[in-house]
Image (cartoon, rainbow, N blue to C red):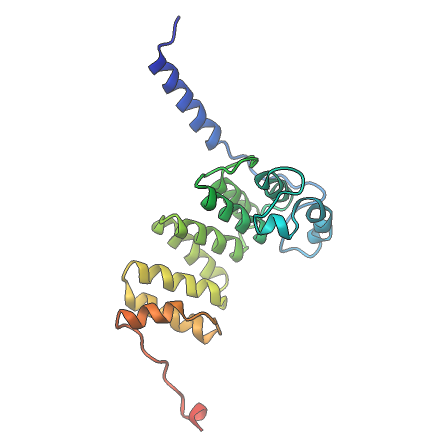
Length: 213
């Protein structure tokens, strides 16, 4: 049976999509495991010294080959490695791809593996939410950031990023609510406050009588 060029193209696209869709779960091996576990982190230097130095983290140069390959290796050992997840996300956004050169899986797959293995890890969800937010996937970003906020209600950066998302959606009452939480928790950057001021929705926090004294 001969394939026409159109049929061949269709088969190629289906095969490519199926390849990208494959996302097997993380299986713990040594060294490796939960990035937030002090016991598992004992093996972290073995991975980082050969695959995740500052040059890799900052997307300057790979240590053993491509940046995607070294970050991928790190995440294959520590799936919820916060800085490696952030680097993989930034690499994908920089290169405008869902699967950077050298990476074994798509960016979303790395996050899915991290969350499935360490569902308690609020920071992994926050980094995923930021990646989705940068890609203008607001609904998915909101789901991840709200889940992160439930896990870590005192995490200022999560509250701030939720405020940014609501401000982008012009839901200013919600944005203000999260801005108040973020700044009360000590978040330093003024960007959200400036956005709310520009939109006419910022209100200065009330000063208690004790604080005034």
